[in-house]
Image 1 (spheres, helix red, strand yellow):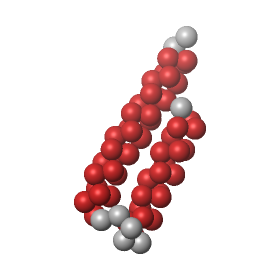
Image 2 (image 1 turned 90 degrees about the vertical axis):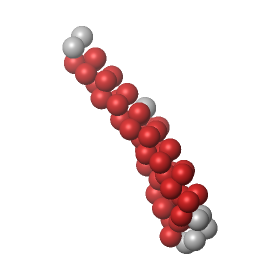
Image 3 (image 1 turned 30 degrees about the horizontal axis):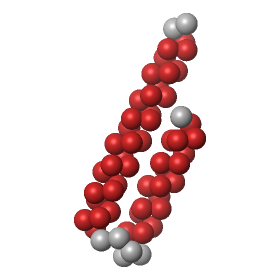
Length: 57
């Protein structure tokens, strides 16, 4: 999951670069970025839950 978290962070960075260089329109960026943010929230939640479960065992 740590690798997935790093990859989605890199993806978000790349999306920001694509928007700043006008390769992506704002509407395209917003749509993809919203999904990317949701993915990072899910991954972060999974990591936190796994850590909590490890501490309780």
